[in-house]
Image (cartoon, rainbow, N blue to C red):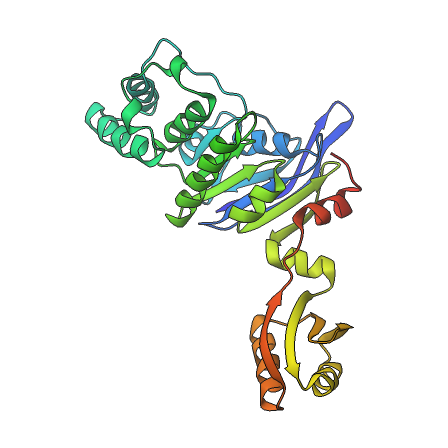
Length: 307
């Protein structure tokens, strides 16, 4: 879907983005994180055609994206962190105005407006003036507007900036819903806990460079050297420890009275076989669970604690 190749952007002699390569597949919900000044917003503005790259290229759904490209504008729905709305318009009129900019027919705009306002939970606000809406409602309205022309890629730059906790939850649920419908989404945010709960993949930038990118669980596992597994053992602990030490992909981290903690570097299928081997060798278990990785800790490790 989105291919970024050797993207570089200079402001004078300062490299805001340096040789960035990234692929976001169709249907992915990709989280873009990094400290202030990392180059996230510059990258997003280049992707959306608002800035020209110094070097490199961006392709969306097979189409070369360039600053000011009319075709590119049809492929992208953009929700900036701070956006302008026309306060003297009603919600319905706001949607009609943007639909007309894309050359859509009035009947088509009316139908899609109803569907999209329902999607963002603003169906009862269509005849309300935009300036009377809360910030959270305005942000959801901006998402509806960005979806009006059915873009291939939805891009959101810090959409939760300035929102209260309830509005952040509503935005998170909206994005998860869009993801479940197959929409490809790129979102930047500083709220790492929320990204870990809704994104399928992330990319971490620092100093204008992409430090790492991929599936969240894969990145956390790679950074930790494996997945920590807690196994509750009723009897047969000695046998369990012996079997674990024989496994090349396992490191025994801790042996407690009724709990064995290991670091597992294999796949989920290999872990299932490992648990099966324990049971087959007369080790009595009451259960096991994996220790979830900490995205905030990983972020601080990779960016040197910068915020």
